[in-house]
Image (cartoon, rainbow, N blue to C red; front, side):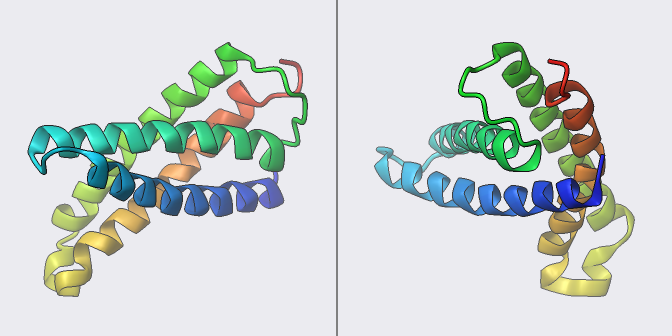
Length: 139
């Protein structure tokens, strides 16, 4: 594991995060209603797009794997780690926002700051897992 690869992992994650949010907005505009079920559907579909894009970009730019064949086992592991990262982000965001009382400290910014910090901390889990199990050289 290297600092330069981790930095690329963070940059790609930020880029993919922005694309995923935009994708969710586009999907939401195409749905017939704005209900909890349709909102959930838009989140799941956008997250799926984000996982695929993240896999492709990290595979090529972070871990320098340029072959065009798709290893479905690697993609399944990547997806599992992405979902684990989402779960960790969710739990850490709750802990930071409510356990660390960020609402009292930061007011209206607490939700965004808690989420951003949690997402950053979660990369400390997802990056080494991806480097070790998904994008290792002997795969």
